[in-house]
Amino acid sequence: MKKMNVIVIFNKDMTETLMCERTKEPYKGMYNLVGGKIEKENDGLNEAYRELCEETNIKKSDTKLIHFMNITYIKWNKELEVYYGVLNKDVKLVEEVNKLKWVPIDDNFFDMNKYAGEGNIGHIIEEIKIDMK
Image 1 (cartoon, rainbow, N blue to C red):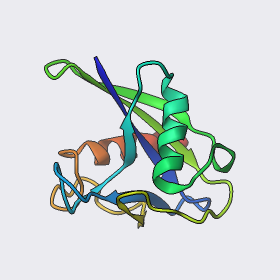
Image 2: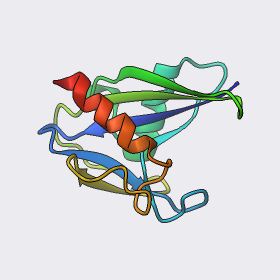
Image 3: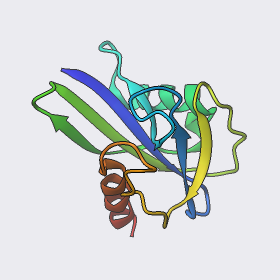
Image 4: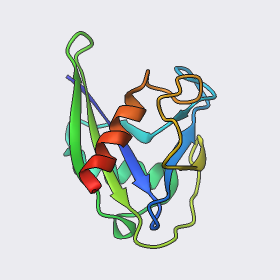
């Protein structure tokens, strides 16, 4: 099974979440969560920290990631591991490929003209907000 991860990062005040603007298809020009492929020899949590650092410069010492859920796509033999964390300080972001943008957490993440993932980003963020209450 092909494994991938997405990471939802909130600023330290819990008012914004980090998005990247995709530079290639699918979803070119739309906002998406940070994440990537999980290498077979590594565990998911370490891969989430690796992807987060590569794509944003956010290090393990800047946040504690929580493995929140997995979404399995049986038909495509693909599994998506979902992690989230809150920054414990301000961090200087460094973009790898995609532009990074802080978005207010009350934005409409179900807007499929703006956000990738066919509504999954909205579902993921709403479920995390419930978990954090």
